Image 1 (spheres, rainbow, N blue to C red):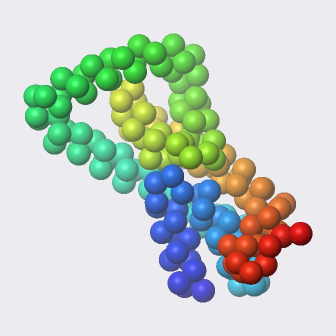
Image 2 (cartoon, rainbow, N blue to C red):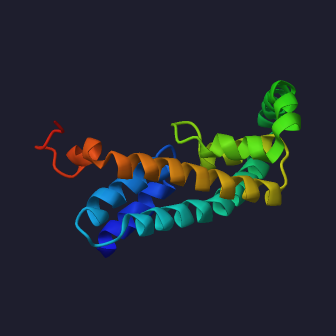
Length: 167
């Protein structure tokens, strides 16, 4: 069981996978066998995903600061940020932190804690606001993915047993 929990947390930490992969994996490997209740699987993955948020923030912050010391990269960065801010600023003004939370909470590739962090950083969010948005977004994503997995777990059974196809 410890190895499955390790893989759940690892999947949660991988960009583009996050909860979209870790909750189905944990459900199939631990809940289906009765080792861990599906709610415990979801809670563990949600907590791991939220703990990832400050780590990603500090990594992005310090890595960006390092690269922005190079004048050529700084010019490109400034151009891209100004362009993105002009396009997104009306939406940020209108929806603010809730809009960022919804972006993080949509369980589709290209959304999540990693891209939410990059967007928050580029848009000048404060760390505290990003953490609130991440907490809400991770809860939304966790609830959606858990509901899909628990209600339709048979659709994912081929991950556990590739010889068994649904239907």
